Each structure stands twice: as C-alpha cells, then as structure tokens.
Amino acid sequence: YWGLPTEWLGKQIEHYQMIDSTQTLALKRAQEGCEQGLVIISDKQTAGKGRRMREWDSNNDDGIWLSFVLRPNLIPAQAPQLTLLTATVLVKVIEAITELKPKIKWPNDLLIDQKKVAGILTQAQGEHDHIHYAVIGIGLNVNQINFQLTEMQTYQATSLKIETNQTFSKTELIQLFLSHFESLYQIYLTEGFAPIKQKWLESAYRLGEQLCFKVNGVEKTGIFVDLSDDGCLIVEDDQQKREKLYSADINWF
Ligand code: BTN
Image (cartoon, helix red, strand yellow):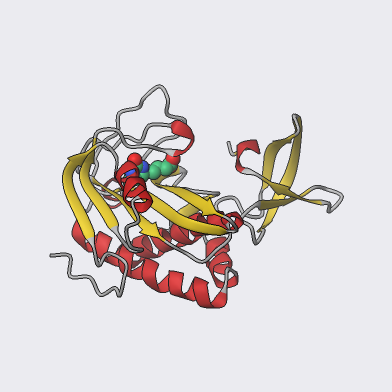
C-alpha cells in the first residue's frame, strides 16, 4: 500500500502501530545484516530517541517516525554528510507540498519560524575504513495541534498543520520523502557532496550571521560563512580568520 516509485529504498518496509523506537529496531536489523533500504515506520513510539540521549516526543500518531538502513561505501568521517543530505531532502519535501520555507539548523534540526518541525538522528557503525551501516531516523511533526513542553526541552516545537492549518497525508509524505531521498542519495554517490552542500546552504539557518560559540572553553563570536566538506560549520572572525566548529560549541540563541 505504499506504492513507492523507488528502486531500493523501502522495497522492504516494516510498519508498526506502536513500538519503542524505530531507530532501536533499525539498528538491530542492521546488526543482523538486513539489506540496504529497509525502512521501519511506527505510528507511535513509546520511547523515541533524540540526539545526545534526549527523549523524542512521539507517543502520538500525528507525526512521521521512521528509520532506514543504508550500507554506503563511505569512510566513517563522511557520516555527518548523510545527516546534511537528509535535511535537504526534508526541506524539499516540505517545499513540495506547502508554501513554507524551512531552515536547517546545523546539523540536524529543521525549523519553521525558529520552531522545530523535524529532527534527524544518524547513527553509523564503522568497520575498518568503511561504514558498515548507517541508520538514519527522522521525526517529522505533521498533524499535531499542540505540544506538551517537557522540562528537558530546549526548543519550541511546531508541526506542518500548525503552520498551514491543513491536515496532511502521512503516507503521501513518506512516499515523497523516500523517493526524494533515493534520488538525492544517488546524486551524492555519483557527484559527491558538493551539490548537496549547495542545496543545504540555500536553506541554512543563520548563514551570514554572527554566532556565539565556545572553543576550548573560550567564548568567541564569528560570522557563519560556510559548511566544510566533512560537515562542520565554518565561522570567520573580524580578522577574517576561519575556524571549523563542532556541534557542541554553538549557542544559537
Ligand atoms: C533530534 O532532533 O534529536 C533527532 C530526533 C530523531 C527522532 C526520530 S523519530 C524516528 C526515529 N526513532 C527514534 O527513536 N528517533 C528517530
């Protein structure tokens, strides 16, 4: 019933009404040796996971909670590129069905009007110089009309419905996501990261603006000028000195 136009992504789909986390199950399937392209979807998750061990509020069937398995021929240092690629795919999907212009907050959040509409969780396992598998999880808020603010939460959330007053078909969004992902991933494998980076920069949150960040405990400011090929943010200080940043260091607000 998914009617997917894809060649390999989602050829095999496991769809549950309720499990703890699609990510946990997809990681297990990957370890067991499943094929590339396996997609796990759950209507609700009882223990959705965010980055850095945070919880992900998904014990409702108003959002898309899915994880999928890739077996790319990449080195482990390229894994962050998969997150950036996924973010550009989500932007494309949202732009295809709404007038919204989502922003990608580096590295893995999608924002609409400063509020989080989607998050991405990439977990890769390396073997020698190779990624053995990568599991990408996406949480996209679709038809929620309100969110419970938890103590842990450091951001405000929104959904496509809150932003547009429309209700969306989750099945259609999943189809769009998987087919856009497969085609952009193909471009990535043949042409490299450059075309992905270009699309990513078009939707980057606060590109060209001043950011506050910490390097080795020292607070600094700099203009967010670019993205590096290994997926770091590049900032430039007032002496035009450039520096690469890793995620933990930035204060976005
Ligand atoms: C984040 O913003 O911290 C990432 C959130 C990722 C949530 C998705 S929902 C589907 C998949 N299963 C999980 O348990 N987490 C990811």
